[in-house]
Image (tube, rainbow, N blue to C red):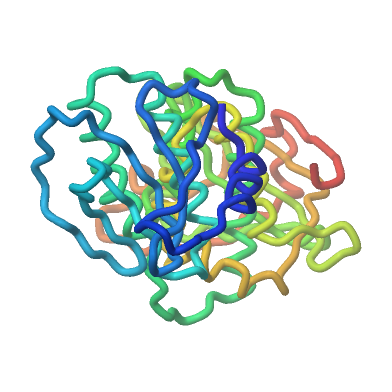
Length: 326
């Protein structure tokens, strides 16, 4: 399976001579059934090329997205994916790896060419470099906590369940719970170690779902400590696991995009760094667990926000894990 460092080595060996429209090398040594290559075109832009059999009728129009273009090069029968902004080169490599993983074992030209094109459209939104208002420390801290829980979940899962777990992350979509898994839902709260309380911001966050468990995961962190890690660094670790287990990294990119965070702008938050010191897990389904939810408050009451004091939740503690950030 192709890895990021292997792509980097191929790129280094490609020099555009000007003798043809493209200078390119095949991605692998013949492992892939479809012939895929990476190279430079006459504009010195990086490209991914998919060779199509001469007798196959390619039926699609050239598509120009922000920083990414898809077209058919008739002279050589290549479908070409071109990166038009060098600032997105790392993300372009991620896209190449994802496409490769999806089609390298396919022999049906109709199927693999359609997947190739579909992934261009799916990923094109991640190459948008629009300017956004910077999030606060608290919002990034909350996202870090959720991403850290995801990191732990995918480290322990089988490859066959990986994408299901990635899809379970609902926090960035502002849905009822941060994680919606098959057998349980998880609400994540991230706080500084010196605090003994967490904020519940709606009557839906601790609402139970029939026949499913409900856990509150409280993550205690130290901000900007010696061993702290940025959101971008944590995302890199998550990406490595996803790629190694052949998962779909675009699921995470789409989730972060809900908060206007992309691989291009995530590093503006590198001054916010966190070290996870402890994770405490509480069972919220216990009848005596203190919570205000949609089902236990009058219909006339809404937009509920309240504070949970952790010193009073010891009876509901399922587990507590102390560690330095992994």
